[in-house]
Length: 501
Image 1: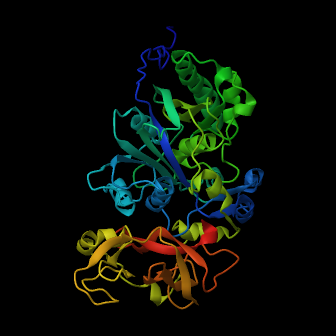
Image 2 (image 1 turned 45 degrees about the vertical axis):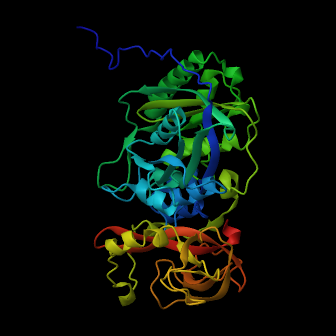
Image 3 (image 1 turned 90 degrees about the horizontal axis):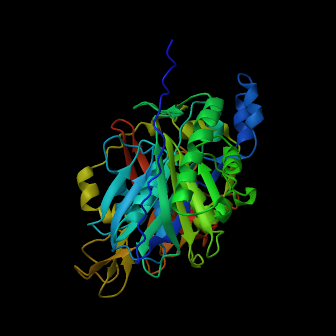
């Protein structure tokens, strides 16, 4: 009887060519967003103890969960805003948005994000999807671009079946990196390697909300242990780097602690391992490899070599060199996002936010939330970009932007004036338990912006300190309403206490 033919008899051959450009391109800015609420895994395990007592073994730490009004688009906007603080919004060649859990099947999500970030209209907005490794792939392509400034954002809101292991392990988050050339570059791409094979550890069918996973031991032993070292070794060989030159190493896409096993197989020092973010955030899918890169960039010193690997249908690997210290800025970054947290112990909140628990909200919730797409287009800069008006005659700021100034009544004097980064405070506030809200009570307040604009807004992410008149606020891009009949999310801006920044 003839011996069985191996499924993949071809030998993996690393590419030998690598072009070094005199005009160094690389990373020029970073940003991150982790949802503020962190659900304790012990609360998840306790809720399922009657049926799945074995989940108790994974009931350590916490995972980030989205509020009802957060999704891939809102997280991407927040990470992008963090990355773009202090930078021009008018010189971007491309915006690449990577996600496996974006809310629409037929819609360019990057176009929504670009509008909320007020990027130039001729920006090329592209969605990257269908694999958790595409976040790293999008970044590699942006770094390899011959010219122009490119913004790469990866975001995922990962869903899982109640009682599943993935419900314990998954998390939500977004990472943003700006790529360009010149003096602003602080980390350059040394090279990248791809290994693509039909090794499917998990998948999600179209129309489904949860992934189907294969057996973990097979994924670890047959997939990670054999495929990742091939790709990493090939890249190191091509770049003439030895494992001891790697200062920071991160691996995403595998079970917890698989990074340590791969590092040992590659002879990478244990102290080079980056935090896997599993204990405090969870597995964030496409965003995970970029969040690990952010963790490295926030720690790295000039001369450090960073290697990031993303396992999915093979492996994507990229090596970066830190060429100068990370610039000091007001950006929150990964460290700030991790620190800004509110402990959550209500497991039912997760189910309600994910639409897995249909509550009886009463007749006040029975409202048709149809959005006029015509008006959304005509006022897109105001609705999506929070752009008000500033009177060229008296200097008063107002929102919305109207034909006449609310202060001096002058006509046609309104100049566009963005409010999303303008300092603001609470002038008045109230908590409404009668009006419908998926997260009662509905907190509303009159927001006073510096310069004179006042706007009645919903207030979110309020912690244990509560609200007081004069509390400093920051703006947050969120879902205002969900049109469940048509499957549309109506996006707008909400206010958040500065303690949540």
